[in-house]
Image 1: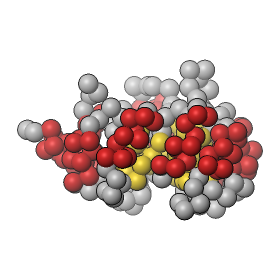
Image 2: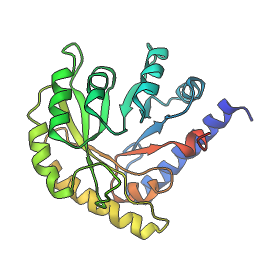
Image 3: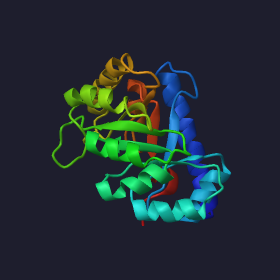
Image 4: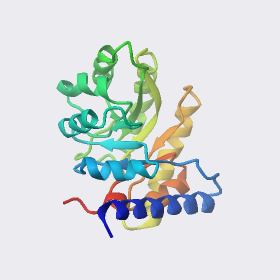
Length: 230
């Protein structure tokens, strides 16, 4: 099977698994959005996914992403930045992306707000939560998210959409579900305080079923679509 046909087949399997997880969770089909994580993947791979209806793509590495965005200019793609943010990346993130999932500080939020071009609609942003409070991971502590969200909501060039988290890896479905449930509880509490707060970005190739069961609205899948990174 060619790489393009393999990607199409993988996407079909992932979509079927999402639909099954939605059904098992008692949720309507289409309630979970699929973000294809295309970091390190080729333009050809992205085009293969695009050809079968995938329009949301996530990138971690800015320079790689900018090259792809330029080469795929004119395609119906929504670009999501999901990597770590340094202040020197803020201008390009503000100008070239539709979504930012990894916002975790007010200073970066204010900088991106200043740099978002007026010709573009406000940048959709999610606050990254360090749900397991790991020193090796970015993100704000859950209890800090309320104040940060209130501050971001005042920035006119940003549109606060929800939360993102990358839990500690676990092969135990019960532990996965427990962590995602804690995240969803925080999400619901914050949703009551903010309009347009509709996105819980949680779940990857190894745990997305439990994320959907717990209430995730967007899952980030790379390996299960594009294969193991080479």
